[in-house]
Amino acid sequence: MLLAPPRRALRVLLAATAALAPGLLVAPPATAQPAPPATAQPATAQAARSADRTAACPAEGEVTQRYHSGHNGVDIGNAIGTPIHAIGDGEVTHSGYADGYGQWIRILHPDGRISEYGHMYQRFVSVGEHVTAGRRIALMGQEGNSTGPHLHLRIWGDSSTSYGIDPEVYLAEHGVTLPCVPGDVPQPRPLVYPAESGRVVSARSADGRLEVFAAGADGVHHAWQLASNGEWSAWESLAGPGGAELAIAPNADGRLELFAINGNTFQHRYQLAPSGGWSGWESFGGGGRDIAAGVNGDGRIEVFASGPVGLFHRYQTAPSAGWSGWEPTGGGPADARVEMEKAPDGRLEVFALNGNTFQHQYQTAVDGGWSAWEEFGGGGRDLTVDHNQDGRIEVFASGPVGVFHKYQTGPAAWSGWEPTGGPADAQLTSERTSDGRVEVFALNGTVARHLWQTGVNAPYGQWADFGGGGTEVTATSNADGRIEVFGTSHAGIYHKWQTGPTTWSEWAWVNATAGPAID
Image (cartoon, rainbow, N blue to C red):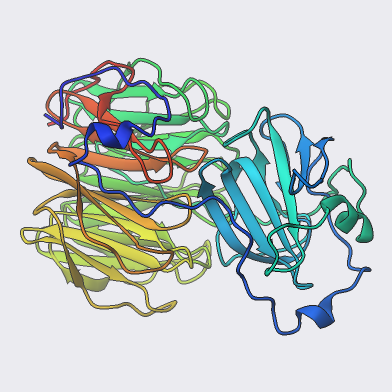
Protein backbone atom coordinates (compact mmCIF):
# COMPACT_ATOMS: atom_id res chain seq x y z
CA MET A 1 0.00 0.00 0.00
CA LEU A 2 1.03 3.58 -0.53
CA LEU A 3 1.90 5.35 2.67
CA ALA A 4 -1.07 5.33 5.03
CA PRO A 5 -4.67 4.10 5.35
CA PRO A 6 -7.33 6.10 3.49
CA ARG A 7 -8.39 9.41 4.98
CA ARG A 8 -10.67 12.13 3.75
CA ALA A 9 -8.74 14.89 1.98
CA LEU A 10 -9.57 18.27 3.47
CA ARG A 11 -8.30 20.80 0.93
CA VAL A 12 -7.39 23.58 3.25
CA LEU A 13 -4.16 25.46 3.07
CA LEU A 14 -2.90 24.81 6.58
CA ALA A 15 0.59 25.69 7.63
CA ALA A 16 0.26 22.83 10.09
CA THR A 17 0.38 20.27 7.27
CA ALA A 18 4.15 19.95 7.41
CA ALA A 19 4.08 19.64 11.18
CA LEU A 20 1.76 16.63 11.04
CA ALA A 21 4.54 14.57 9.50
CA PRO A 22 7.79 16.27 10.50
CA GLY A 23 10.01 13.44 9.38
CA LEU A 24 8.36 12.87 6.03
CA LEU A 25 8.50 16.25 4.39
CA VAL A 26 11.53 18.18 3.26
CA ALA A 27 10.55 20.90 0.83
CA PRO A 28 12.33 23.41 -1.40
CA PRO A 29 13.29 26.76 0.09
CA ALA A 30 10.33 29.03 0.81
CA THR A 31 9.36 31.64 -1.75
CA ALA A 32 9.54 35.02 -0.08
CA GLN A 33 6.83 37.65 -0.16
CA PRO A 34 7.66 39.92 -3.13
CA ALA A 35 10.11 42.65 -2.14
CA PRO A 36 11.33 45.70 -4.03
CA PRO A 37 13.16 44.42 -7.10
CA ALA A 38 16.92 44.06 -6.84
CA THR A 39 17.33 43.74 -10.60
CA ALA A 40 19.97 46.12 -11.88
CA GLN A 41 18.81 48.43 -14.65
CA PRO A 42 20.24 47.89 -18.12
CA ALA A 43 23.25 50.08 -18.91
CA THR A 44 21.18 51.96 -21.44
CA ALA A 45 18.08 52.23 -19.29
CA GLN A 46 18.27 55.92 -18.47
CA ALA A 47 18.95 56.84 -22.09
CA ALA A 48 16.07 54.63 -23.21
CA ARG A 49 13.50 56.32 -20.98
CA SER A 50 10.99 58.42 -22.87
CA ALA A 51 7.41 59.49 -22.26
CA ASP A 52 6.37 58.81 -25.84
CA ARG A 53 6.80 55.04 -25.52
CA THR A 54 3.33 53.53 -26.00
CA ALA A 55 2.03 51.19 -23.29
CA ALA A 56 -0.70 48.55 -23.52
CA CYS A 57 -3.84 48.14 -21.43
CA PRO A 58 -3.07 45.70 -18.58
CA ALA A 59 -6.61 44.35 -18.13
CA GLU A 60 -10.24 45.22 -18.68
CA GLY A 61 -12.14 46.19 -15.54
CA GLU A 62 -12.89 48.93 -13.06
CA VAL A 63 -10.30 50.51 -10.79
CA THR A 64 -11.29 49.23 -7.35
CA GLN A 65 -8.43 50.77 -5.36
CA ARG A 66 -5.98 53.44 -6.41
CA TYR A 67 -2.35 54.01 -5.53
CA HIS A 68 -1.74 55.79 -2.21
CA SER A 69 0.64 55.73 0.73
CA GLY A 70 -0.93 52.57 2.09
CA HIS A 71 -1.48 50.79 -1.23
CA ASN A 72 1.58 50.23 -3.41
CA GLY A 73 -0.16 49.86 -6.76
CA VAL A 74 -3.54 49.96 -8.46
CA ASP A 75 -6.25 47.29 -8.36
CA ILE A 76 -8.31 46.46 -11.46
CA GLY A 77 -11.32 44.31 -10.63
CA ASN A 78 -13.09 41.91 -12.97
CA ALA A 79 -14.13 38.25 -13.19
CA ILE A 80 -11.78 35.34 -12.53
CA GLY A 81 -10.15 34.39 -15.81
CA THR A 82 -10.08 37.91 -17.29
CA PRO A 83 -6.91 38.14 -19.45
CA ILE A 84 -3.96 40.13 -18.10
CA HIS A 85 -1.54 41.71 -20.59
CA ALA A 86 2.01 42.99 -20.42
CA ILE A 87 1.96 46.78 -20.36
CA GLY A 88 5.11 46.93 -22.49
CA ASP A 89 7.94 45.05 -24.14
CA GLY A 90 10.39 43.45 -21.72
CA GLU A 91 11.95 40.42 -20.10
CA VAL A 92 10.17 38.30 -17.48
CA THR A 93 12.33 38.37 -14.33
CA HIS A 94 9.90 36.63 -11.93
CA SER A 95 7.06 34.20 -12.56
CA GLY A 96 5.93 32.15 -9.62
CA TYR A 97 4.12 32.05 -6.31
CA ALA A 98 4.52 33.98 -3.07
CA ASP A 99 2.70 33.68 0.24
CA GLY A 100 0.06 36.37 0.59
CA TYR A 101 0.40 37.37 -3.05
CA GLY A 102 -0.52 34.20 -4.91
CA GLN A 103 0.83 33.87 -8.42
CA TRP A 104 2.76 36.88 -9.64
CA ILE A 105 4.93 38.13 -12.51
CA ARG A 106 7.55 40.85 -12.92
CA ILE A 107 8.70 42.29 -16.26
CA LEU A 108 11.78 44.49 -16.77
CA HIS A 109 11.13 47.05 -19.52
CA PRO A 110 13.65 48.81 -21.80
CA ASP A 111 13.11 52.14 -20.00
CA GLY A 112 14.32 50.57 -16.75
CA ARG A 113 10.85 50.44 -15.15
CA ILE A 114 9.56 47.15 -13.74
CA SER A 115 5.90 46.18 -13.93
CA GLU A 116 4.51 43.70 -11.40
CA TYR A 117 1.26 41.74 -11.63
CA GLY A 118 -0.28 39.91 -8.65
CA HIS A 119 -3.09 37.58 -7.48
CA MET A 120 -3.29 35.69 -10.79
CA TYR A 121 -5.31 32.56 -11.44
CA GLN A 122 -2.97 31.22 -14.14
CA ARG A 123 0.35 32.31 -15.69
CA PHE A 124 1.51 31.88 -19.30
CA VAL A 125 5.08 33.21 -19.23
CA SER A 126 8.33 32.02 -17.68
CA VAL A 127 11.47 33.65 -16.30
CA GLY A 128 13.80 34.74 -19.09
CA GLU A 129 11.04 34.97 -21.67
CA HIS A 130 10.80 38.15 -23.75
CA VAL A 131 7.30 39.56 -24.18
CA THR A 132 5.82 42.33 -26.28
CA ALA A 133 3.33 45.02 -25.24
CA GLY A 134 -0.18 43.58 -25.12
CA ARG A 135 0.97 39.97 -24.80
CA ARG A 136 -1.42 37.92 -22.69
CA ILE A 137 0.67 36.82 -19.72
CA ALA A 138 -1.88 35.56 -17.17
CA LEU A 139 -5.51 35.28 -16.10
CA MET A 140 -7.02 37.34 -13.30
CA GLY A 141 -7.63 35.59 -9.97
CA GLN A 142 -7.93 36.20 -6.25
CA GLU A 143 -5.07 34.19 -4.78
CA GLY A 144 -3.24 35.31 -1.67
CA ASN A 145 -4.57 38.15 0.49
CA SER A 146 -7.46 39.19 -1.70
CA THR A 147 -11.11 40.06 -1.08
CA GLY A 148 -12.13 39.41 -4.68
CA PRO A 149 -10.77 38.76 -8.18
CA HIS A 150 -8.54 41.57 -9.38
CA LEU A 151 -5.17 42.48 -10.86
CA HIS A 152 -2.81 44.24 -8.49
CA LEU A 153 -0.47 46.23 -10.75
CA ARG A 154 2.70 47.86 -9.44
CA ILE A 155 5.27 49.93 -11.29
CA TRP A 156 8.77 50.16 -9.85
CA GLY A 157 10.61 53.24 -11.06
CA ASP A 158 13.94 52.56 -9.37
CA SER A 159 15.17 49.19 -8.12
CA SER A 160 16.79 50.87 -5.11
CA THR A 161 13.50 52.21 -3.71
CA SER A 162 11.11 50.46 -1.35
CA TYR A 163 7.88 51.85 -2.87
CA GLY A 164 6.62 51.99 -6.42
CA ILE A 165 5.28 54.85 -8.51
CA ASP A 166 1.64 55.50 -9.39
CA PRO A 167 0.70 53.04 -12.17
CA GLU A 168 -2.12 55.26 -13.44
CA VAL A 169 0.25 58.18 -13.91
CA TYR A 170 2.83 55.99 -15.62
CA LEU A 171 0.28 54.45 -17.96
CA ALA A 172 -1.26 57.85 -18.76
CA GLU A 173 2.19 59.18 -19.70
CA HIS A 174 2.40 56.29 -22.15
CA GLY A 175 -1.04 56.67 -23.71
CA VAL A 176 -3.25 54.42 -21.54
CA THR A 177 -6.00 55.71 -19.24
CA LEU A 178 -7.70 53.39 -16.74
CA PRO A 179 -10.21 51.84 -17.06
CA CYS A 180 -9.21 50.53 -20.48
CA VAL A 181 -9.90 47.72 -22.93
CA PRO A 182 -6.97 45.68 -24.29
CA GLY A 183 -6.43 45.95 -28.02
CA ASP A 184 -6.41 43.11 -30.52
CA VAL A 185 -2.75 42.15 -30.30
CA PRO A 186 -1.66 38.93 -32.09
CA GLN A 187 -0.77 36.36 -29.44
CA PRO A 188 2.03 33.83 -29.99
CA ARG A 189 1.05 30.18 -29.95
CA PRO A 190 2.26 28.82 -26.60
CA LEU A 191 4.41 25.69 -26.52
CA VAL A 192 2.30 22.71 -25.42
CA TYR A 193 4.48 20.28 -23.50
CA PRO A 194 3.63 16.56 -23.41
CA ALA A 195 1.99 15.11 -20.31
CA GLU A 196 3.58 12.10 -18.63
CA SER A 197 2.28 8.73 -19.85
CA GLY A 198 1.77 5.60 -17.74
CA ARG A 199 -0.87 3.58 -15.91
CA VAL A 200 -2.14 6.82 -14.35
CA VAL A 201 -2.19 10.13 -16.26
CA SER A 202 -3.54 13.61 -15.61
CA ALA A 203 -4.07 16.82 -17.59
CA ARG A 204 -6.02 20.05 -17.28
CA SER A 205 -9.22 20.67 -19.19
CA ALA A 206 -9.58 23.97 -21.04
CA ASP A 207 -11.30 25.52 -17.99
CA GLY A 208 -8.34 24.67 -15.73
CA ARG A 209 -9.82 21.64 -13.92
CA LEU A 210 -7.55 18.61 -13.58
CA GLU A 211 -8.78 15.26 -14.88
CA VAL A 212 -7.10 11.99 -13.89
CA PHE A 213 -7.32 8.56 -15.53
CA ALA A 214 -6.10 5.25 -14.09
CA ALA A 215 -6.00 1.86 -15.80
CA GLY A 216 -7.04 -1.06 -13.63
CA ALA A 217 -7.45 -4.69 -14.60
CA ASP A 218 -11.13 -4.04 -15.38
CA GLY A 219 -10.51 -1.01 -17.61
CA VAL A 220 -9.94 2.71 -17.27
CA HIS A 221 -11.32 4.82 -14.42
CA HIS A 222 -11.78 8.60 -14.40
CA ALA A 223 -12.09 11.38 -11.79
CA TRP A 224 -12.07 15.16 -12.23
CA GLN A 225 -11.95 18.35 -10.22
CA LEU A 226 -15.36 19.88 -9.63
CA ALA A 227 -13.80 23.34 -9.93
CA SER A 228 -10.38 24.61 -10.91
CA ASN A 229 -7.89 23.97 -8.06
CA GLY A 230 -10.75 22.38 -6.13
CA GLU A 231 -12.27 19.17 -4.83
CA TRP A 232 -12.60 15.94 -6.78
CA SER A 233 -15.48 13.87 -8.13
CA ALA A 234 -15.93 10.22 -7.32
CA TRP A 235 -14.22 7.70 -9.60
CA GLU A 236 -16.16 6.75 -12.73
CA SER A 237 -15.57 3.50 -14.63
CA LEU A 238 -15.06 3.98 -18.38
CA ALA A 239 -14.40 0.33 -19.35
CA GLY A 240 -11.89 0.24 -22.21
CA PRO A 241 -8.63 -1.76 -22.33
CA GLY A 242 -7.75 -3.46 -19.05
CA GLY A 243 -4.27 -3.08 -17.58
CA ALA A 244 -3.47 -0.42 -20.18
CA GLU A 245 -0.74 2.15 -20.55
CA LEU A 246 -2.27 5.61 -21.01
CA ALA A 247 -1.37 8.90 -22.67
CA ILE A 248 -3.29 12.17 -22.88
CA ALA A 249 -2.94 15.33 -24.98
CA PRO A 250 -4.99 18.42 -25.83
CA ASN A 251 -6.39 19.04 -29.27
CA ALA A 252 -5.82 22.44 -30.88
CA ASP A 253 -9.45 23.36 -30.10
CA GLY A 254 -8.97 22.62 -26.38
CA ARG A 255 -10.55 19.15 -26.21
CA LEU A 256 -8.53 16.51 -24.35
CA GLU A 257 -7.90 13.16 -26.03
CA LEU A 258 -7.04 9.95 -24.14
CA PHE A 259 -5.16 6.95 -25.55
CA ALA A 260 -5.04 3.45 -24.01
CA ILE A 261 -2.99 0.44 -25.14
CA ASN A 262 -2.47 -3.07 -23.81
CA GLY A 263 -0.99 -6.18 -25.42
CA ASN A 264 -4.09 -6.81 -27.52
CA THR A 265 -5.73 -3.52 -28.44
CA PHE A 266 -5.30 0.22 -28.79
CA GLN A 267 -8.27 2.56 -28.25
CA HIS A 268 -8.89 6.28 -27.76
CA ARG A 269 -11.66 8.61 -26.63
CA TYR A 270 -11.96 12.39 -26.63
CA GLN A 271 -13.92 15.27 -25.20
CA LEU A 272 -16.88 16.27 -27.36
CA ALA A 273 -16.33 19.92 -26.45
CA PRO A 274 -13.61 21.75 -24.48
CA SER A 275 -14.04 20.86 -20.79
CA GLY A 276 -17.09 18.82 -21.77
CA GLY A 277 -18.25 15.21 -21.82
CA TRP A 278 -16.43 12.37 -23.50
CA SER A 279 -16.99 10.16 -26.53
CA GLY A 280 -17.06 6.40 -26.24
CA TRP A 281 -14.01 4.26 -26.94
CA GLU A 282 -12.93 3.96 -30.57
CA SER A 283 -10.36 1.64 -32.12
CA PHE A 284 -6.94 3.19 -32.72
CA GLY A 285 -4.81 0.19 -33.69
CA GLY A 286 -3.41 -3.12 -32.47
CA GLY A 287 -1.79 -3.92 -29.15
CA GLY A 288 1.64 -2.90 -27.90
CA ARG A 289 3.79 -2.16 -24.86
CA ASP A 290 3.67 1.59 -24.18
CA ILE A 291 2.60 4.94 -25.69
CA ALA A 292 3.32 8.65 -25.53
CA ALA A 293 1.49 11.60 -27.08
CA GLY A 294 2.70 15.10 -27.90
CA VAL A 295 1.45 18.18 -29.71
CA ASN A 296 3.16 19.60 -32.79
CA GLY A 297 3.78 23.32 -33.17
CA ASP A 298 0.71 23.62 -35.41
CA GLY A 299 -1.51 21.90 -32.81
CA ARG A 300 -1.65 18.40 -34.35
CA ILE A 301 -1.37 15.51 -31.87
CA GLU A 302 1.27 12.86 -32.62
CA VAL A 303 1.28 9.43 -30.91
CA PHE A 304 4.15 6.94 -30.55
CA ALA A 305 3.66 3.29 -29.56
CA SER A 306 6.26 0.64 -28.75
CA GLY A 307 6.07 -3.09 -29.38
CA PRO A 308 8.25 -6.13 -30.04
CA VAL A 309 9.66 -4.72 -33.33
CA GLY A 310 10.32 -1.15 -32.19
CA LEU A 311 8.26 2.04 -32.35
CA PHE A 312 5.54 3.25 -34.71
CA HIS A 313 3.79 6.61 -34.86
CA ARG A 314 0.54 8.11 -36.05
CA TYR A 315 -0.44 11.77 -36.29
CA GLN A 316 -3.36 14.05 -36.99
CA THR A 317 -3.46 15.22 -40.60
CA ALA A 318 -4.83 18.58 -39.49
CA PRO A 319 -5.35 20.19 -36.05
CA SER A 320 -8.30 18.62 -34.17
CA ALA A 321 -8.98 16.42 -37.21
CA GLY A 322 -8.50 12.88 -38.54
CA TRP A 323 -5.48 10.62 -38.35
CA SER A 324 -2.80 9.19 -40.60
CA GLY A 325 -2.17 5.47 -40.69
CA TRP A 326 0.51 3.89 -38.51
CA GLU A 327 4.03 4.44 -39.84
CA PRO A 328 7.32 2.83 -38.73
CA THR A 329 9.88 5.14 -37.13
CA GLY A 330 12.88 3.23 -38.44
CA GLY A 331 13.52 1.15 -35.36
CA GLY A 332 13.81 2.08 -31.72
CA PRO A 333 14.12 -0.24 -28.69
CA ALA A 334 11.72 -3.18 -28.56
CA ASP A 335 8.97 -3.10 -25.91
CA ALA A 336 10.27 0.22 -24.59
CA ARG A 337 8.95 2.68 -22.06
CA VAL A 338 8.27 5.86 -24.05
CA GLU A 339 8.10 9.56 -23.15
CA MET A 340 8.09 12.76 -25.21
CA GLU A 341 9.27 16.32 -24.66
CA LYS A 342 9.44 19.53 -26.65
CA ALA A 343 12.58 21.47 -27.54
CA PRO A 344 12.65 25.26 -27.03
CA ASP A 345 12.02 25.82 -30.73
CA GLY A 346 8.90 23.62 -30.69
CA ARG A 347 10.30 20.39 -32.15
CA LEU A 348 9.13 17.16 -30.51
CA GLU A 349 11.66 14.63 -29.17
CA VAL A 350 10.96 10.99 -28.26
CA PHE A 351 12.85 8.94 -25.67
CA ALA A 352 12.57 5.12 -25.51
CA LEU A 353 14.08 2.88 -22.82
CA ASN A 354 14.05 -0.87 -22.23
CA GLY A 355 16.17 -3.12 -20.01
CA ASN A 356 19.09 -3.11 -22.43
CA THR A 357 19.23 0.21 -24.30
CA PHE A 358 18.13 3.84 -24.35
CA GLN A 359 17.56 5.68 -27.64
CA HIS A 360 15.99 8.94 -28.81
CA GLN A 361 14.88 10.60 -32.02
CA TYR A 362 13.72 14.14 -32.77
CA GLN A 363 12.00 16.22 -35.38
CA THR A 364 14.42 17.84 -37.81
CA ALA A 365 12.11 20.85 -38.10
CA VAL A 366 9.01 22.11 -36.30
CA ASP A 367 6.00 20.05 -37.52
CA GLY A 368 8.46 18.16 -39.74
CA GLY A 369 10.02 14.75 -40.28
CA TRP A 370 12.11 12.75 -37.85
CA SER A 371 15.78 11.95 -37.42
CA ALA A 372 17.10 8.40 -37.24
CA TRP A 373 17.20 6.80 -33.80
CA GLU A 374 20.35 7.70 -31.86
CA GLU A 375 21.94 6.02 -28.86
CA PHE A 376 21.23 7.78 -25.57
CA GLY A 377 22.58 5.35 -22.94
CA GLY A 378 22.20 1.91 -21.43
CA GLY A 379 19.05 0.16 -20.31
CA GLY A 380 16.97 0.87 -17.23
CA ARG A 381 13.64 0.54 -15.45
CA ASP A 382 11.75 3.81 -16.15
CA LEU A 383 12.25 7.37 -17.36
CA THR A 384 10.84 10.85 -17.03
CA VAL A 385 11.57 13.86 -19.24
CA ASP A 386 11.07 17.55 -18.46
CA HIS A 387 12.44 20.93 -19.46
CA ASN A 388 14.35 23.57 -17.58
CA GLN A 389 13.11 27.14 -17.31
CA ASP A 390 15.44 28.06 -20.17
CA GLY A 391 13.94 25.30 -22.33
CA ARG A 392 16.78 22.77 -22.12
CA ILE A 393 15.48 19.21 -21.91
CA GLU A 394 16.40 17.09 -18.88
CA VAL A 395 16.04 13.30 -18.71
CA PHE A 396 15.97 11.03 -15.64
CA ALA A 397 16.25 7.22 -15.77
CA SER A 398 16.05 4.65 -12.97
CA GLY A 399 17.84 1.35 -12.58
CA PRO A 400 19.13 -1.08 -9.95
CA VAL A 401 21.53 1.46 -8.38
CA GLY A 402 19.20 4.47 -8.30
CA VAL A 403 18.34 7.39 -10.58
CA PHE A 404 20.63 9.08 -13.13
CA HIS A 405 20.05 12.22 -15.19
CA LYS A 406 21.29 13.76 -18.42
CA TYR A 407 20.56 17.26 -19.71
CA GLN A 408 21.04 19.46 -22.72
CA THR A 409 24.04 21.76 -22.57
CA GLY A 410 22.97 23.45 -25.81
CA PRO A 411 20.40 23.07 -28.59
CA ALA A 412 21.96 19.81 -29.86
CA ALA A 413 24.49 18.89 -27.15
CA TRP A 414 24.04 16.73 -24.06
CA SER A 415 25.89 16.19 -20.81
CA GLY A 416 26.96 12.71 -19.79
CA TRP A 417 24.88 10.65 -17.38
CA GLU A 418 25.24 11.80 -13.76
CA PRO A 419 24.13 9.90 -10.62
CA THR A 420 21.57 11.45 -8.27
CA GLY A 421 21.05 8.58 -5.78
CA GLY A 422 17.38 7.86 -5.15
CA PRO A 423 15.34 4.64 -4.95
CA ALA A 424 16.41 1.61 -6.97
CA ASP A 425 14.27 0.46 -9.93
CA ALA A 426 11.77 3.24 -9.31
CA GLN A 427 8.84 4.52 -11.31
CA LEU A 428 9.56 8.15 -12.18
CA THR A 429 7.62 11.33 -12.88
CA SER A 430 8.50 15.02 -12.90
CA GLU A 431 6.81 18.41 -12.91
CA ARG A 432 7.88 22.03 -12.73
CA THR A 433 7.23 24.13 -9.66
CA SER A 434 5.38 27.42 -9.94
CA ASP A 435 8.71 29.28 -10.10
CA GLY A 436 10.08 27.06 -12.90
CA ARG A 437 12.27 24.56 -11.02
CA VAL A 438 12.12 20.88 -12.06
CA GLU A 439 10.98 18.49 -9.32
CA VAL A 440 11.35 14.71 -9.70
CA PHE A 441 9.38 12.01 -7.90
CA ALA A 442 10.54 8.37 -7.61
CA LEU A 443 8.52 5.46 -6.24
CA ASN A 444 9.26 1.75 -5.88
CA GLY A 445 7.56 -0.97 -3.85
CA THR A 446 9.07 0.29 -0.61
CA VAL A 447 9.47 4.07 -0.66
CA ALA A 448 8.57 7.32 -2.41
CA ARG A 449 11.13 10.13 -2.59
CA HIS A 450 11.49 13.46 -4.37
CA LEU A 451 14.30 15.72 -5.58
CA TRP A 452 14.20 19.34 -6.78
CA GLN A 453 16.38 21.99 -8.31
CA THR A 454 17.81 24.43 -5.77
CA GLY A 455 17.16 27.30 -8.18
CA VAL A 456 15.87 27.94 -11.69
CA ASN A 457 18.06 26.06 -14.22
CA ALA A 458 20.24 25.06 -11.24
CA PRO A 459 21.68 21.80 -9.84
CA TYR A 460 19.62 19.52 -7.60
CA GLY A 461 19.58 19.10 -3.86
CA GLN A 462 19.32 15.79 -2.03
CA TRP A 463 16.54 13.23 -2.25
CA ALA A 464 13.92 13.62 0.49
CA ASP A 465 11.29 11.18 1.75
CA PHE A 466 7.86 11.56 0.18
CA GLY A 467 6.00 8.55 1.59
CA GLY A 468 5.74 4.79 1.33
CA GLY A 469 5.97 2.52 -1.68
CA GLY A 470 3.54 1.85 -4.51
CA THR A 471 3.32 0.78 -8.13
CA GLU A 472 3.06 3.89 -10.39
CA VAL A 473 3.32 7.65 -10.01
CA THR A 474 2.49 10.74 -12.05
CA ALA A 475 2.71 14.46 -11.32
CA THR A 476 0.80 17.38 -12.80
CA SER A 477 0.07 21.02 -11.94
CA ASN A 478 -3.11 22.73 -10.84
CA ALA A 479 -4.17 25.89 -12.63
CA ASP A 480 -2.67 27.92 -9.77
CA GLY A 481 0.71 26.23 -10.23
CA ARG A 482 0.59 23.85 -7.24
CA ILE A 483 1.92 20.38 -8.07
CA GLU A 484 -0.38 17.40 -7.48
CA VAL A 485 1.03 13.85 -7.39
CA PHE A 486 -0.94 10.63 -7.92
CA GLY A 487 0.48 7.36 -6.62
CA THR A 488 -1.01 3.97 -7.33
CA SER A 489 -0.95 0.80 -5.25
CA HIS A 490 -2.54 -2.62 -4.95
CA ALA A 491 -5.23 -0.93 -2.82
CA GLY A 492 -6.09 2.02 -5.07
CA ILE A 493 -5.08 5.55 -6.02
CA TYR A 494 -3.70 8.11 -3.58
CA HIS A 495 -2.87 11.73 -4.21
CA LYS A 496 -0.80 14.39 -2.49
CA TRP A 497 -0.74 18.09 -3.37
CA GLN A 498 1.11 21.25 -2.53
CA THR A 499 -0.80 23.35 -0.02
CA GLY A 500 1.58 26.23 -0.73
CA PRO A 501 4.86 26.81 -2.54
CA THR A 502 6.83 24.63 -0.11
CA THR A 503 4.28 22.58 1.87
CA TRP A 504 2.42 19.39 1.04
CA SER A 505 -0.77 17.66 2.15
CA GLU A 506 -0.69 14.12 3.41
CA TRP A 507 -1.44 11.23 1.06
CA ALA A 508 -5.18 10.60 0.74
CA TRP A 509 -7.69 8.82 -1.47
CA VAL A 510 -9.20 10.83 -4.31
CA ASN A 511 -12.59 11.99 -2.96
CA ALA A 512 -12.20 9.53 -0.06
CA THR A 513 -12.61 6.58 -2.43
CA ALA A 514 -9.91 4.09 -3.42
CA GLY A 515 -10.41 3.95 -7.18
CA PRO A 516 -8.89 1.08 -9.16
CA ALA A 517 -6.10 -1.12 -7.83
CA ILE A 518 -2.96 -0.89 -9.97
CA ASP A 519 -0.59 -3.85 -9.75
